[in-house]
Length: 172
Image 1 (cartoon, rainbow, N blue to C red):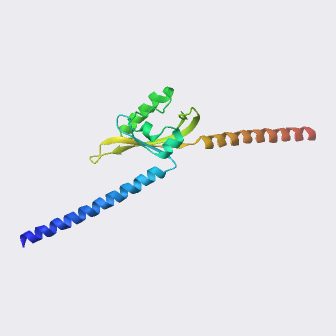
Image 2 (tube, rainbow, N blue to C red):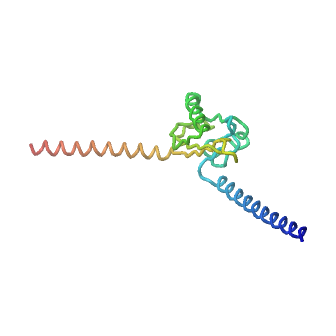
């Protein structure tokens, strides 16, 4: 009696554990597929600033490959912006989040792009910060379009002002 009850409990615990492991594996695969296919650059740093994850969009956006980046200290930030950047990263390591920080950034090929950078702390099972996840969007095209819209708007305002001035001059 007692042995068969114990055996039943062990089998039930093993079945529950297997179900939990299967769910964890499935969730992990889904998350990795999402990161891999994301159109946004996703980079994970450990607490010492070394890259532990570099998705394909990070390679497309910034120009460095995953192989070149993983294990290295994140060095994509321009020298003049590094101190301010690492101060912000230290704040994220303290638990704050960074949302849509706009920066100019040089790609590996030297082309200057506009990006927004968001960052959030990652936590271990005990709740301690053990890394940072960064999401980077290339907003170069949007910035260019904004500038074009402002330029067109300025020209239109000047043209309308000139037309009003000329028309009023004729009436007077």
